[in-house]
Image (cartoon, rainbow, N blue to C red):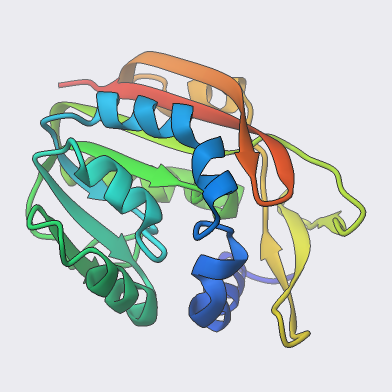
Length: 231
């Protein structure tokens, strides 16, 4: 049975290999995808206005740019050097953004503290047993009362989806790169009840919202969870 470390490494290996094609294969360069995210982007910009934000798993910076438009500052982190470099290059026009390599499960390279934290399309890739580990690391970098928001996919079905559940209760999906290289990566679909259990005693004002956006393959349903860290 694979260890938690091996399961985490699978996700990292997939995104490491996908780094050079990530921006295009997500559809972030397409006008229709950009328009489809309009409502979600407005929500994020309103939520993070004036905040010092720690972003987890920034990818190539699409969502970093969204929140940087209204945030006081953003430290955008990712475990992959290639993605951090790409984000830094893409966001040179934002003087309030700094990009750095960081392991989301430790954040030991992040020295400052923040009034808010954000991640888009990250939570689904966390093995369930590692969720408390991630939250402890994240919360250690936040100030009392900090605002936190995560957003990701609700469960979907499509012809290309091949999914299995492992011994730890984690969903795995098969993914392919444009050159045909195949990977299996964690793709979990948490519920409102799971978040309530994870955040019990450490968070307040917990909200769980479901909504539809326009994604690369057409309409997609997302969840957004937000809360404030107790003092």
